[in-house]
Image (tube, rainbow, N blue to C red):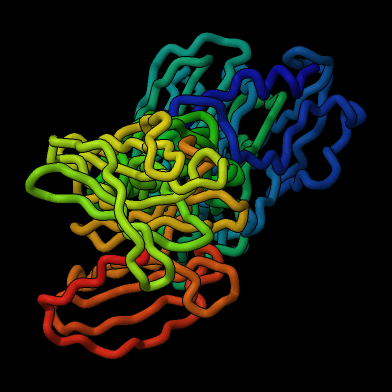
Length: 516
């Protein structure tokens, strides 16, 4: 029960996050109840100089025993724990002290053999003054913290930040020394480095000094992050993507930096290793960074980034049997089909007229799985997309494809079955960025998407789709509008496999207008 009480009294370093300790190692705590009264405490306690400190039943706090050092000349006795070199730059010690009118030093010190120490300790004087004593070899200083300390037991806690060179001191839960300058660790004395690093109690003169429920703790900055989502540089991320970075060992909180600029601005502090940034914009690159924190310091990630998917866009068809030719008059809005027998013209049929010239025919395919070719439209002013369901040259119905794609840089450039499910998918190209994406469709219902390789040279345009190598998979036809070069990407679904050059047609008045 005494150890539980000690831990409950811990509070955080005030120069760090004012939360729970976190990332803490408790190398030693002792209530002295396991030792026989009147005996020297066994390892890890060590008695230095003069007579030994002993375990006594004369005075105790919360139990029946305590540690006492007493009597004799100046600096007659010390009882300490050797910390070795294992402690970190952030060290805390605490315990109940009763000086009973004596003069004692409670705390941390370093020594070279038995030569003068370097102190970072609390000194309780016979006249009831309380000092913080810090000394580096032959130089030192005392800071008066309070006068008139009452008799009896008092709870002393000291936190040392060797990295910043400051310490804080509490007495009975009240901060009485804030950001005090402290002596560095690993000092030299007389030209020799310190070899002993102790923490405990030293009796100087007069009456005994008692120690009970003593505890030492130290901690480290948080560890690294165990995983990352989205991955750095990921593209095609959903607008509702969550940020996950995996727990960093020892972290008690995380600062999240997030935004569209690099470096990103601070966003929020989180207690867990995930964050919902809300609904994001389409086709936007976001930057983010995480700083894991605890009372001992922080660990920062690099700046990561990801890009969201384009606004969903509708689907396009494919047909079989004999291929006919679909025409649209861009001045009148008339539409007509040439009925073909191979390359032989066999007649024509008028379709419904669409006088609003913002509507463009951008593809064909079987969108309702009735085995007949339907027509895909896009409105170049509003971004709306519509499928006409056809029975030959007769329109039997129509459906909007939702949502509309109001960013008019995105153009439907082809259709085909890119995922092998027998349904027509839609190929898009962004004429402003060079990004390319396929919408996987279930009829006119958008299902998901896949990014293709980016082509940032905007002179290259996708001008058609089709199976150019007879493997049953949709390939992509490109033309450079300035050089007249033509090339086919041979695809495996949405994966680029290889390419084949077609003959150049340098007269750029010639445009490829199909197959689509």
